[in-house]
Amino acid sequence: MICIDTNVIYHFLFETELTSTSEKIIREAIIEGIAIPMIVYNELLYIVGAKIARIKYGIKGKYSFRKHIAKHGFPGEAIEKVNGFIRDFKVTMLRDYQDPDELVKTIKLYRLAPNDAQIVLTCKHSSIGTLATFDEDFKRVPRLKVVP
Picture 1 (cartoon, helix red, strand yellow):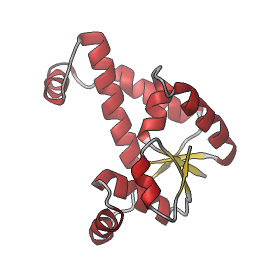
Picture 2 (tube, rainbow, N blue to C red):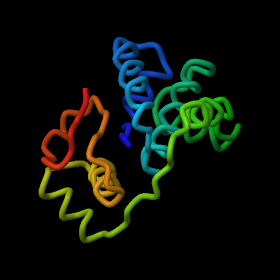
Picture 3 (cartoon, one colour):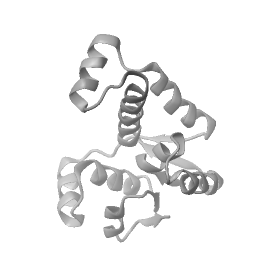
């Protein structure tokens, strides 16, 4: 099983300079199985929703996006896009491992942002040793093989 970070899926779903690399990563990961922690699902819904709101409605910035959600609801197209990816690639959803003390320890030990530390802990406690991400910060975690 390979854990896929938010940024790899984002670049797969939207055409960017990293789309071809994301496609290659996902094709290779399908063989072993793809997993994502709930924190990645949460991040993915938010950034895909914000991107769709920017494209369709010209919404820029998190406060404008929040106002848009309050008035019109969360973009259903974003939910469909993310859930379609999960369904099409038979993604295993991982429950986030939750231990505040271990989270803080991981943040400090590897100098990570809280969401990144959460991903590291979920991989650790799900016995997943490979993380596909474009985030170089994860390379500071010796137990994880980071690809590409």
